[in-house]
Figure 1 (cartoon, helix red, strand yellow):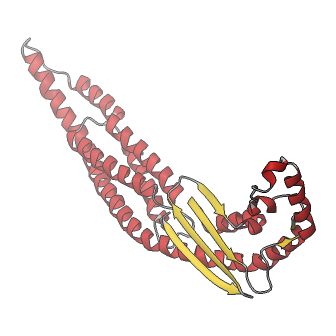
Figure 2 (tube, rainbow, N blue to C red):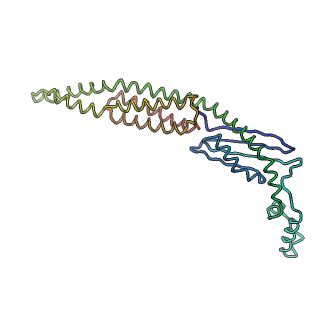
Figure 3 (spheres, rainbow, N blue to C red):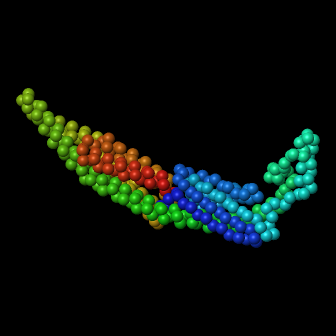
Length: 296
């Protein structure tokens, strides 16, 4: 199934007076890359959140934002008053006497002093918040995937069109290749007869056939046509809605292989019509590569 890498999903809930919200945004990236932002009191959940998202979203640059507003019986943290007084007294004692009356205290900085916040209170908050955050994360991921799937339908239509364009051009190449050898034989015979007539000689048929055989072997593209046709079969399977796996990387690989075969056909053939069809195929393959960069 084709899915875009661009998506957005959000979910929110209240539990025991606390408010939770999760937002997920994703954009194109060759690999999976997650950036997780959580409140300080839930920082221990960061790894779990990234792992959970990686199981749902296979590719893309993903930004996860978790908001948490404590309330009710759940406190954001438990302050140790004695430790706070001790830390504040020590800080004031370190100042010159003339500065103590004018000193101001940054409460945020004071809370970072070891012992001022009781970690057991934070641990309780994390255990309370974990199931709620993970549930909302799953809901947000589902909405991201729904948006990716909708955009993926448009990508799939474009990929189908490009694949059919390659197949049509390849059919012309396959039909034209034998005629190209015959056309070369006619051109060679006319050229040789024209040159030999000037000296009163006639081209030997054996020499002509030997030269044509060498050309036919050198310009035979049957193997490349078969391989490219096989790549197209795989391509159609990958972009099918029944294909369960993310298709982006597979499409990128197949487009490289198709381009390799198209280039080989171009280098072997000297026929103008085949060359023109190869240009059409390479143009469509480039479009597939562009769309593959947008697919999960």
